[in-house]
Length: 125
Image 1 (cartoon, rainbow, N blue to C red):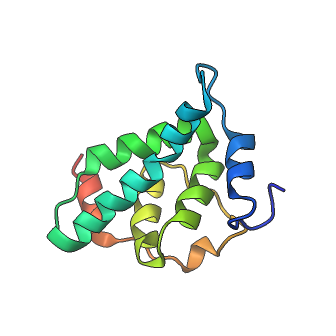
Image 2: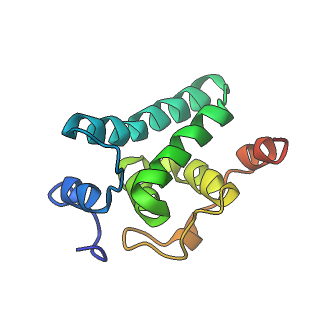
C-alpha cells in the first residue's frame, strides 16, 4: 500500500494510515490538517496570478503537514493533490526544508525543475 502510486481510491486510506497526531481528537481534525494542501494550492494560484508569494505561510503549512504526515507522506500528498504546474514550486519548498525524499512512486522527482524565483526568495529568509 505504501509503495503504490496514489489514486482517488486509496488516497484517504493512505493519508489516514500515515497520519500521526497524538493530540487529534476527531476525524474533523484529520481533515483540517489535510485541507492545508488546499490552502497551499490557493497560495500558489495567487502567486501565479498576482506575483504575491507568502513564503512564511506556505512554509508553516508544509511544516505542519510534515509533522503529522512525515516527510515522504507530505511529499506524496502534495504532488498528488497539486497540478503539474505547481510541482516546481513544491520541490523548491521541500528542498529548502530538506524534506524531499529521493523517490516517490507517483513521479520522478529528478525530472521536476525547482522554481528559481522561489529559491531566491527562500535564500533571503
